[in-house]
Image 1 (cartoon, rainbow, N blue to C red):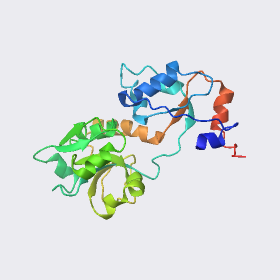
Image 2 (tube, one colour):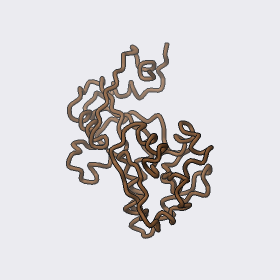
Image 3 (cartoon, rainbow, N blue to C red):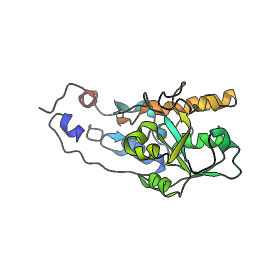
Image 4 (tube, helix red, strand yellow):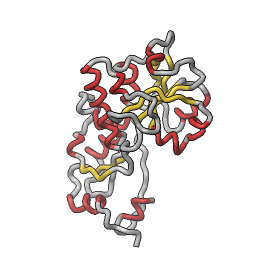
Length: 236
């Protein structure tokens, strides 16, 4: 609706979901296949933008060659936060490191969930395959013990989780300092055990600065890219 309202001519905007490869399918399509006339805009999974850098063979695009439009949100005032159900006996991330059996952590392709296990050493069993709201429903039903999600997203969309103390935050990603709203929750950087671990955390946190990125293919004419980028258009 917003693209229709603010784009000259008020064109109809059709949404086409292209699941696959943690967002790689959509990025490949926009970069290689979609028309290069400005009629196609990609809304990407920010984590997929690291795929070529990490040597993912399926990623047939170059992130720095996209014509970036912008992002409607950033993590400037939020943090990607790992939550676990409060019915579990663990109070801190250190407790999860020492857990006698793995904590089942749901994941929707986010690299920071994997970092929580492989780099920070949380005793997690990472479960993939969730789409959309399924992962939040799974957490509410107790099918999984925890998940990673933006803190402000929980505040806005699932406030009951916090008001009823259904979940407990145990680590936050995205900033050097702790988010003021959750001052007792350590940052991933604080929990890093080696300089290499800290460097990896900082690298993967870079995707949070992208927010929810919009982009066009590299060959779209510059004037059409600028038309979409412009903040001067109104609904008149």
